[in-house]
Image (cartoon, rainbow, N blue to C red):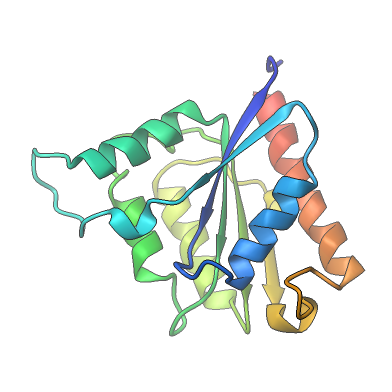
Length: 177
């Protein structure tokens, strides 16, 4: 059993402040229980291009530290040109040899116009990192923009239910570690 509070790090694959992925993360953060502490990782744009050298930049050390301190991670990403955004892939590449994702409970939400290729690619990368992504903690939301109103709220109740189910699956996987 896990002791409280549960610490979840959320990561948006988009760099835009008001992106669909950021709206999804904000919805989940507002919907969370009192025993869950959510931290949004905001340094993805500050990470240098991956370089497998012995020197680890301070921004990468901070990224790795936040991952280590988190009990679980939720990644919400768009799809760019049938793939994962380069900034997100770069962030994940910085963890290949450092093991922050090994056996870490992770949830994946792909929110895009299509999204299936980025979703599959991200799941494959997380598998290579040995993270724990259950089927219940992975969600593809196609046509996300049609499910968000002009004020930046999710307006589709089915999407809200699916998001909360993924969130709860992540929390369950953390508690059952």
